[in-house]
Image: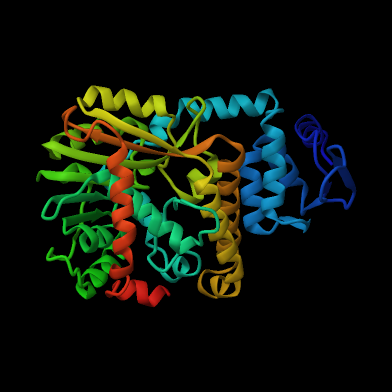
Length: 425
């Protein structure tokens, strides 16, 4: 094994039972030998050099191409072992300098004007839609679920997430709601069915728009409200006003240079007594750059902010922070469910997208789950208003409304969920 790679692994991996088999077939052990063994085989010397110089990128690319293989354990076991050790023993100086450079350049990497935003969205969301059917719940919720009680399955936890958000929005029948980054329409459909709100969902994904509209056409709200309207639009193009604005899992695509524009837009489109709810991945430590593998292959232009980066832009917009909740480990459990479902359906995934894509996707799901378990990633739910008196002054109304929604969900479940939900089930 190349000496630079051996030194890197020796410095980082102090705990666990990790073995690397190099391109010549020689085995090299790292860690204290405790725990389940993880054995990694490398196909060539070029990959050894790449791992030594840029381990975050090289591990993902090596696994995706099949040049880095797991002979004992799986890719989750390997990433988890590395991340647990990295928490106490970071990569040595040259790797830290590379990470620092990426952090310095992150504003340029996340410069997302409307055209680039649309291209970035298409990269991830406009793939063959059957891929998402393989691992998401029947309602196609592609964001952190809410495990409100132990033992919840994925679909129930995603329903609990929608209920939790609806309660925080404090909706009344007939109010106008804007859903920024509406995905395949699941939350918008839920709000229309359960609250009688008039919902407009916007997305930059052609595939998501098509499915969301199919679902809206098949919806029976039972509440007297019209079915949601879904529009292909950038958030910066919205000029109407709304009583409520919600955005779930979209803020990660906004890009750091555009935070002021995003929150200024919220302030502009909210009515004076309006409320907004932002649900976004965030980090509990200091700002850092995006993982390079994720940035290149999964979410180009994406970024996970620290709370300090969000709040500065909120303050300058004039919006009032009414409530902040931190969902810890909920996304780790969500990603675990997605990963297991994807692996269970791996033959179908290979038939749809090929082996390289499926290895890439598995690495993405495993690495993301580990980030929420070992790298200070959480989900922030930030409630915003334009006036300090727009909502009750205690949080009791949220729990009460959530209980009301829980009682009504049984009735709602009897109505059609829409074409895509039936197809995904």
